[in-house]
Length: 256
Ligand SMILES: [Cu+2]
Image (cartoon, rainbow, N blue to C red; front, side, top):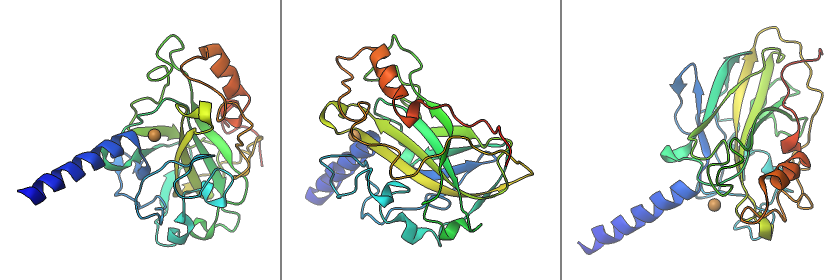
């Protein structure tokens, strides 16, 4: 009895932390959900727990580290992670581990980066990244600590690979930023990378690209200084606009 009671308490605690802290582990292609880590690089951290923060981190990783690209140690798992084939213009989704939902207030975005060598299983993500999906405030008169945010309560991010994306192998990085600790430089960032092979005859060329790390820093008020309990929705919107999160997404325009 004693052991099962302890077991129950641990299970309950794990379920709780899974609901508060989340990680993208599954890819949904053509309506089919993959298994965990089939197409998404798994971290080498002993637990799938996230987030990454600028300060008070639990594992020394911050958004200035190279593992901010695809999660701690995950490049080590790149070769054993499969590559999903996706036609340019199709919609896919990245889904959370353990039936989790986004339980924190803040924006969600998806970035892509093409493997220059053509082989994403050997690509660290040190090239150029561009943004293809963005969700910020959907209900400015709602609760800024909860459902004012489009992604609040989502269990997956569903997005379209722009129709004009050139064929090739890519990393696709889904990211959610929880802003509830931003007043103490403790914004919480949750992210993972899927490996995909885009097919088709696209010849677009993203005009705005970023490097990871480098894309965010803690002199941006969105991550360090914003306060969800006292700031107005308009102030928060302008903090967003002062970061790449406020930049337009690439819709496939331009030509390469
Ligand atoms: Cu949290």
